[in-house]
Image (cartoon, rainbow, N blue to C red; front, top):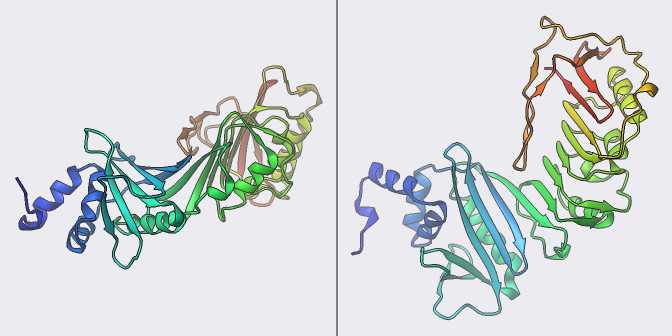
Length: 338
């Protein structure tokens, strides 16, 4: 039985649309300009849209954190539309898209013609973004075997993650250099070779490097962002020394809020070579809280709050800002209090 949605009152329509999955809402918006406008009137919103290229596919993952709600849309480039596909054109666009049912659960793939892949997917992206109350965060997940020339740069992409086992430094630099004003970067692979001294990773606001290795020292000493985590690191104690000294004298790391360095299993900090000339003081609850809970979620990587009662406190000379650090043979943590 066909149900004419436009016969319902606005409140009923709003309730119906908000109960629908995100992919179903987007498919519904294709029906007509009036339907699209009705959907926009419901003022629906999402937290983030993540794109993951996989061969000829691009997987679009839509998520609303507050509602614990998510959906996935598959876009695929094809030489010609699959047999049985429904074709459509978006308003103010000459591009044709194909809808094809891919499961018994009414899941659809959106097809674009291979010759117009990049243009068509960008048009579709902008169309979907226009449905939202406010533009969501755009994130991109790339595997280390992805052809860099095939990557589509979506408007306002603020987060990028590189995943896989290994990646060459040149590839890593080229990937992240594609983005301006990068807010979040995750690097999972072991990176072979030397990253550029001015790599974009050193200026991203939040950096999570899973297998940082020998790259830790150079990246950290050139870091201009807020939060950085370096796991599986090889790092000399002199890097920690230089970081703290420059932060105290306000010579660098002006925006820094937290740093964590976790060493590889066979590595240790030579603490006996660390010179504590900072007039560091033990925890005082009158000076700052015991828990540092300002750590962000970096592309799905949740950073736990720091228990700082056994951290030592130092003070930046220029403005009296308090920072706290903990140094052990296996790890270093540092945070700055508001």
